[in-house]
Amino acid sequence: MQIALRSWTFGFVATAVLAGCGTQAVPVVNLNDSDPLLAENGDASELLPLLAVPGPDDGKSKAKNGKVTQTAAKSGPRLLPKGLLGKRDAQADPAAEETPVRKEAEKGTPEWLLNEIQRVRLMPLPQESKVTESEDEDEEDQPLTPAQEKKFAQEIEKTRAIRRERNQQIIKLAEECLQKTSRNPEQEPLFCAAVHQLLDARLQLALQGDAASIDSLYEAEKVFFERNPKSESASEAALTLVNLTHGNAVRYGSKEPRWLKEFSKRAQVYASRFPEELPRSVPLLMAAGRSCENAGQLEEAQSCFGLLSTKFKETPQGQQAEGILRRMQLKGQELDLSAPGIDGNDIVVKSMKGKMVLIVFWASNAQPFVQQLPQILEVTAKYKKYCTVVGVNIDSDEKAVEAFVENHHLDWQQVFFPSRTQRGWNSPVAAYYGVNTLPTMWLLDPNGIVAETNLDAANLEAKLREVYTPFVKKK
Image 1 (tube, one colour):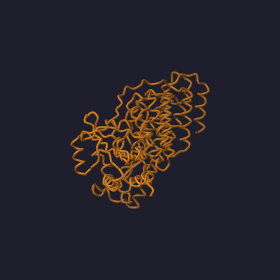
Image 2 (cartoon, rainbow, N blue to C red):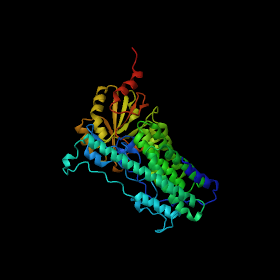
Image 3 (cartoon, rainbow, N blue to C red):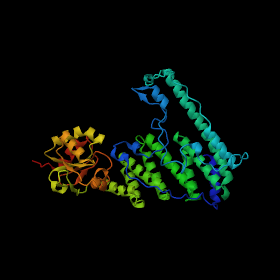
Image 4 (tube, one colour):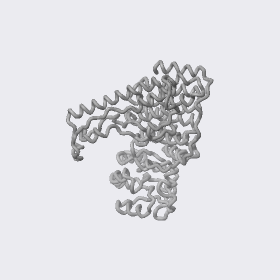
């Protein structure tokens, strides 16, 4: 962290006799557990919360058949909409955010400094030159020439350099404002506004890989929490770290798992310290847990789901987390599954001992399942002598299920609840085990013990052979 930041932060912490920024009232929000991501089998980044940061390409244009296209050049970095993260109660347009300053202020005053920050933020950026003068839409996907690619890259770097310079300006102005307001309780609103501007500028630099800004954000989180753990500044500093680690998890999580772990850690810290921020804490914990589970970071995932199920157990997500933990701890346990079948007869898995049992959660409109189905059918037909298949359907329409079963010649026993209120993602079986992706497949050994829960069409045959091998009688 830079020396300027240290000077004021440690100054006011040492004289921590001031009132904090104050906590905001808990927003009244009806939490909705209907999540379209539940039925998708996406990658870790797709299960992260929405956040305004550049996409995985970090602003680089996308390629088509190995070539940069004009459409990609014009689109620029992918921005995800702001939702869970960012300044609380901020408007969609940054220029519309309320700042407690006067229209006219004497130069050098906190009000003037905040106005200057706003002026810097609203300064227009240079207009990128048109890649092509043609208005023919068919030509927009034509590859750029090497000269056009070079020019486009230069313009991107020029824009980044301008943004970096302006963020540095904002940081200096914000630090000066903090120095002038930190010891005056009456100027606490101005202090909080400067904190927001400082954290936002640091975040933008940190997301560009600036190591000093990353360190500054971690130190600021510590300092503001020590100053007043219930203040808006402490909450926003902690949320900014969640923002930072999420952004890096989106871009680098597949190659650098440490960012997923850090995102999980920061989400847990935020939720633990600021439980009153329930509309943010709960979705963040769920997103971090799912992302870590999909990436194989099971210990981190269980920590997130564990916190959800204990600290926020009254929320729909807290109840769902209980089921997810139950599912994650299923391996090595006997599966006690008894449910109604679509033919009206009960399906009792315990009665199927002696053969392996493959449990398949599916829906007729789940494309990942439909895509894997041919291979699943091929493998299960090959091992029909050794393995029974039980489907757990997540559709709502019984006719759709019957048509799909007939069209694809599924001879599996199918769990399907007669009550419409227990269909779809309200299926008691899916809810009890926190199943949230399709297909989800479990393999039971001949003794009814869950042997595998991480299955897909690609590894199914190998796992069938692996699980059954110990049960083959030696001649």
